[in-house]
Structure formats: C-alpha cells, structure tokens
Length: 260
Ligand code: ADP
Ligand code: MG
Image (cartoon, rainbow, N blue to C red; front, top):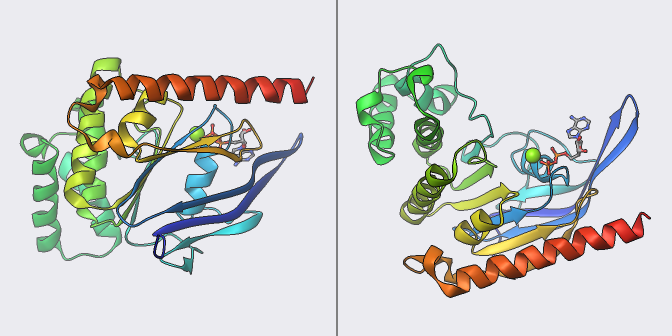
C-alpha cells in the first residue's frame, strides 16, 4: 500500500476516572488506504468509539498517534467527516440547515452552501424534506440527513460510529445499501465502527477484529468480495459471518480464562 489515508500507530488510551483508571485501548495499529472501506468490529466497551475520536482529532491519545496523509492529527480536519451514533442533529434547524452545518463551520459562502446541500439531499433521497425539522423525520431519514451532511463536505475520510444501531432490521439493510452506494460513488476512505457482524461483513473490505478492553487488534480479515452484487445473499457472506462469530466467541472465552 502507498501512503495510508489514515494510520493509527501504537495508540493507547487510559481514562482517569473517579474510580481509578480505565485502559480503553492498548497499542492499536490500523492502516486505511485511500478509498478503502474498513470495518472495526469488537464487543461493547472495547474502545471503538475512542479510536474514532482519536482518528477525528477530537481526542489526543495517551500514547501513540493518528496520522492522515502522513500528517499527525492534532485537531479536527476539514475533509474528515464524522457520523456519531445520535447523528448530532440540531432540532431547531431545518433539514437543509442541518445538512449545511459542516459547510457553515467551514465558512463556505451561502450560495455555494445551498447548491451543495441541495445536491447532497438529492443524493440521499431527502430533497422533498429540505424545510422539515428533525423531529418530523423517521429514524431512517435522520440517518440519511447525517449522511447528507457528511457528503456536503467533500470528505476524503468518513468515520462512522455505529450509525445504524438505533434502526430496526429492515431499515438497517436499506441504510447499509445507502452507505455502500455513497462510498462507491464518492470514493472516500471509510471507517465504520460496529458491534454487528453482518454490518461489518456487508460494508468492510477489511474487517478489523478487536479484543475486549483494553482494545487491541486481534484479527484482520480480508473481505474484498463485499463489492459483489447481492453480496448479502452470497454463500461466502454467510461463511464470513460464521467465521467472525466463532472468532469473537474465542476471543471473549480467552479473556475470561485470562481473568479467571
Ligand atoms: P466502545 O465504543 O467500544 O463501546 P468506548 O471507546 O466508548 O468503547 O469506551 C471504552 C472504555 O473507556 C469503556 O470502559 C468506557 O466506559 C471508557 N470511557 C470512554 N470514554 C470515557 C471518558 N471520557 N472518561 C472515562 N472513561 C471513558
Ligand atoms: Mg462506542
């Protein structure tokens, strides 16, 4: 691989709390190539969100560092988009205003902002809802809006923290399709954090499997076939899910032995 778009190098995170230290991440290494889609899969509490905050420049790790295009990440970067679990929508702003927030922060002129917002809302199928408020939207539509906001920013790196976990099963599949389509069309590098095996296998060209806390990378699974048509119905899709389920079970069992 040439220079990675994103590199996490020897990243460790210790949180100091009232009840002592929490070791969230321990010596985590990940490279994500330009345009690559990586899924990070791990049990709850293993430091997945922490690793994304570090990649986004919202947290400085206790040890190690994140690099984008070879430059150490010290603060949020203009062309990195981050979609959080609750989407970060502002209830008092319209759909169009919410979609344009990233551009507003970047001080993009109003006219250009309007054009790019219109294009992004079109892309995610929300054009007819530009003047609605988030409270009037379904869960899937809020998801689309969060995506539209990311799309307006011409991101070359999209970071997503369990964006689909609040949605019901059928809607999740529809949204997974949308995420895959946007990624294919836009060509950004993407890191999706999830605790869903199916989601990782559907959306990750590579799947990084983490251990329970303190999170470390324990497996990296190649999953290039995710680009095939109807991947969800492919026997290999089920095989990958099964292999991952077994892997996760083993990892958790080993930890339990180690801590017994
Ligand atoms: P995940 O996203 O995989 O569930 P997190 O990165 O959110 O994991 O958290 C990893 C561990 O660090 C958890 O035990 C969590 O309670 C702890 N943690 C996360 N953020 C903080 C914080 N700001 N202060 C103290 N502890 C934290
Ligand atoms: Mg999390």
